[in-house]
Length: 106
Image (tube, rainbow, N blue to C red; front, side, top):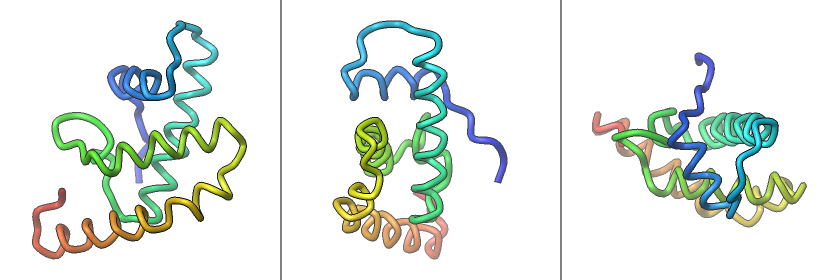
């Protein structure tokens, strides 16, 4: 797997979801790191591709799961995220397994 690149659009959407209304280069850098770690975590648990989080082929469920991951990460409660979103993770994994088997990949 290559490096995960966080687009300006995804960063802006994450900031909007998290109600971050100010611009701060250091805070953006930290949030991008959290987004990369979140994408990596969700990909490892569900099998989604990086394209599921941003761009034309965004998967709304994957992106929403990422944004909620960020909420928990910022609160220092990632252990609770895994428990509270287990059904979402399993559902997304099943969706992507079916899509991959059918060759649709989204």
